Image (tube, rainbow over all chains, first blue to last red; front, side, top):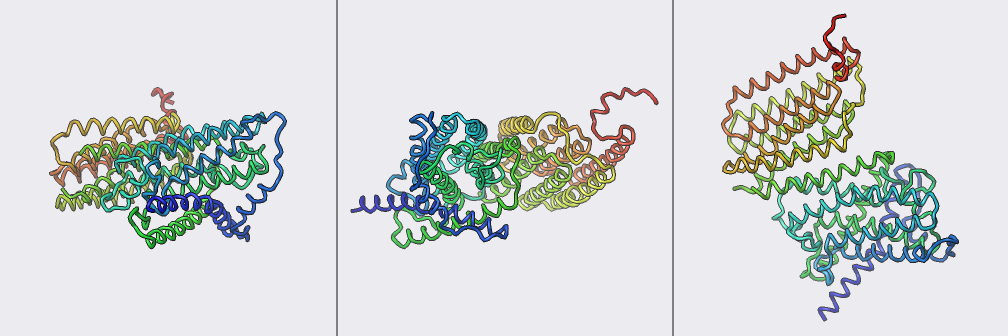
Length: 318
Length: 220
């Protein structure tokens, strides 16, 4: 009985992330529109977009290989697994022993690798540009992410997200400058990886500076739906990751009852809304960067994460 | 040993190091001056916390000096100099920002490793303050080396001196007289540098110190 219940909670978590991911995108778009004095599409528009794309016919280039057709599903699967591993409303789920931060980074890394391959598969110049830029940014963002993971692991004594979240929720974490640096680094990495405004514009495919949209330009129909859903999931993943590590208030433990879980779920929803609004405000207040300034921007994340790890070594060795 | 007291000291000293890095990263003149003012404010907070922890009243004076002179007077004066001289808003650097950052991280890692080894038996507060202070000093030197503009070299020099004050506050028993004289010598150095800036500007129409390289002392 206990096992079944645990599996049910785990299943709810997996379905919840997929169900909520387009809503987060919808909230961000809506708030952005309102901030620029437009009315904006309704909150459910991303769901409608995905359904519409699902029904549409797939148009493939003549020289597209089998890889091109398989990759959308692989990206979606990898991102979904990674997003489902991050504790959203409860820690200590059935599969939380697999929820290792390094495993999540690896899953996201392989999704990015396949997306870059897909960008180059058809052989259009836009896809190549997108892939090359994506890998350039990733070569800075991924080390920053790993260093952030290291500083979290040094503080919490584990790379397992459930343990980290429980440790962060407990009062023994204290006041640490490294955590602040890790937070800023993780936010910068999240903005870069999700192709948000200062790095890339998610709202257009008509710019020479686009990165993510350039790679998926050749996709259509259900393939594009998979990729869009995976992109939304990735945004949700980063928001839940930042939420569960840095703001773990109200997250339900493994021994909390139904009330605890419901409270955790409600608070998780509130965190998502706050994150979506904050992201929209940030994106509205900043201009897009030149592509060659992005390495400086991501370099800040790398530097902060490195500095945070260094400071941790100081305070631990005393 | 009070854990939270140490955490706050660590936070403030680490924040000072972080602001030093922000100064190295910053490539606009007015933003650089604002970050420098922030540096002084963080320094005075850190010194005030040390004063509270050590129960040393004279350190409050040091904190006040840092706040008033370095946080308000010198940045305002530098800003006025930049305005009257009409200096370029962008700061030219000798090498790229990324390389400078990497060098800075290397320097701070080096100084942390060195200081933690050397000060083995000292008090915990002193050890971590000294480690951060040496990194701040080295970063100030790095900034003086990597900037071409004389004003940002001045800022580098002043931030170096902030690191010295942090070290002095961490080491117990630094007499007040020494600190006041250091503060005033920095102020005098600032005045001298200010006069210098005007002279350089008069002579070369720019405060880019690379113009000095060609000057061999021949009279006009």
